[in-house]
Image (tube, rainbow, N blue to C red; front, side):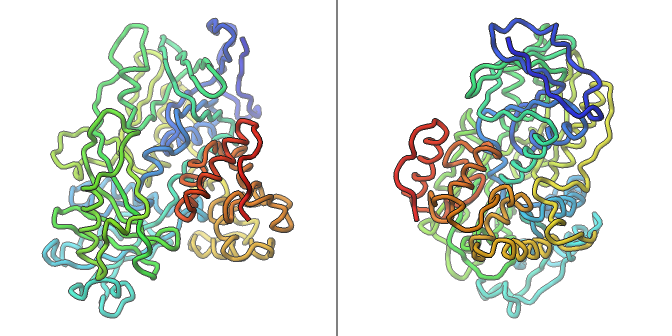
Amino acid sequence: MKIFEHEYPSNRASRHPADPSAAPETDGDVLIIGDVLIIGGGINGCGIARDLAGRGWRVILCEKDDLAAHTSSSSTKLIHGGLRYLEYYEFSLVRKALQEREVLLKSAPHIMSPLRFVMPHDPSMRPAWMIRIGLFLYDHLARREVLPGSRSIDLRKHPAGEPLKSAFKRGFVYSDGWVDDARLVVLNALDARQRGAEVLTRTRCVSAQRSADQWTAVLEGPEGQRTVRARAVVNAAGPWAEAFLRGVARSAHDEALATRHLRLVKGSHIVVPRVFVHDHAYIFQNPDKRIIFAIPYQDDFTLIGTTDIELAGDDPGAARIGDDEIDYLCTQASRYFEKPIRPSDVVWTYSGVRPLLDDASGDPSAVTRDYLLEPNTAAAPLLSVWGGKITTFRKLAEDAADEVGRMLGDAREPWTEGAFLAGGDLSAWIGPTSRTSRPDEDFERFVAEVQKRYPWLDTGIARRPARAYGARITEVVGDARSMDDLGPAVAPGLHERELRYLQKEEWARSGDDVLWRRSKLGLRYTRAEREQVDAWMRAHETGQEEVGSAVT
C-alpha cells in the first residue's frame, strides 16, 4: 500500500497531521491522507479548495467529470448583483453580490470586465418610477470604485436604440460585469493546486464512510482506485449534493445525513450571430414578469438567456434545451429587436441546472439564489453547500473555509479578498495599478504589451490567449520566437504547444474540454476541425500516433 501525504512549507503545514499508522488496509491501493476532502469541481468546490489550501489545510478535491463540466460553465456569464431579486426583497443577497462585483473584477481582469446594461422601458411591464427606485438601490447598496452608476437614456439618440423597435424610446443604463465562467473555475483550481491542493478530475467518489473522527472515501478515476482519509468532508456537488448525502456518504450509526431537499431548475441559453455592434448588453422585461439578457459574446455572437424550467428526470447531467425554450427566448428577444430572432438563427445552445434550496415557492424564478452552508459535527465534520450563484462564490468559499476551521477547532485567517486569481496580476506587464483603475483598461494595456513582446502574433491571434491566460501567457507561449515555434496548427489558431499546456496544466483531456470550456473555439470551427482537435487530444492522451494531418 502506497501512502501519499501532501507536503507544505513548514509555516503553512497543517497543525493536525493525520497518522498514517492508523490507515486501513486497502489491498495495494493508494491512500491519500489530508485534512479536507471536497466533493465537486464546480465554482464552489474549486473556490473552497483554493481558500482552504491558502490557509494551509491539506486539501483533496475530486470531480467526477471535467472541471466546470456542468452548472458552472452554463451560467449567463455575468458578475452581477441580480437587479430582479430586489422585487423579491432579497436585499441581503443583492448587497452581498454587489459587494463582490468589484472584488472579482479586480482579481482577474483577463477573464472579467465591466459591462453596461440597457433596459428599454416598456410601460406595460413596470412603471418608470419603480425602475428608478430599483436602480437607485442597486447603485447604493454597496460601494462602487470602478463601475459607473445608472442613468436614463433616449433610445432615439443612443447607439443602443438602433437595433430596437422604434416603439422603445426611453431606457435606463446601469453597470454589472461579464465573466468567462468555465475559466473562472479553472483559475481557482490552478491557484488551489499551486497552494498544495490535490485536484483529481474524472474521479468519482463511490463511497464515503464516516466515523467519529475521520472520513474514509474510495475514489475511482483514470489511475484506478484510491482511498482517501480526511478529517472533514465538504459536499460541494451542486445538483448532486443531495444525492451524495443519500447514496454515497455513510455513517457508522446510519443517521440521516440529508436533511434538506434541492429544487433543480434548468436554465437554458441560445447563441446567435451578432445582433448589434455596440458594446452594451440588454436586459429585457417579459410579460411573464421574468427577464432575459442579450449579451455581446465572443465578438461575433449574441448570447440570449435564460429560462427557468423545473428539471424533469433524475440526471442533472442530461439536461438539454427544449424546443419550447428556444421558442421562448426567440419570441421574447423579438419583442424588442427590430430584426426578429428565429430558431433557425441559433448556432449553439447550452443548459445548466441550478441547485436551489426548495423553499416551497411555486415560481422557479422566485426561489432564492442565496447559499446556505450546513455544518454537521455529530461525528467527523461534514459541511454541505446548498445553492449559491457564481457572483458570490468567493464569499461562499471564505465562509465555508471559516466554518471548516471552526469544525476542526483551528480557525485560520481569510486571505482571498484582494488576492489575484491565476494570471490576474498584470503588474509585471503594465506596472502597478491603483485601487480605482478600470480592469478593462488594464487589460487593454496588457494586450498592447503582449503584442510588443511577441510581435509575430498578430492582433487577432494575440488577444485570445491574452484573454484566456492573462499573465500566464508566458507559460503557454514559452520561448517561442515565431508561429512555427508554437508547433503545427491542429485547427486554425490552435497550436500543439497550447494543447500540450492545457493537458499538462489545466486538466484538459478531450476536445470538448478545450473547445467549450477552456475556450469557446468550438463556436468558430467546423465539425471536421472540432473532430481534429478531439482526435489530437485522444491520441496524445493515450500515446498513440497523431491522427490525421495538421491544419495549416
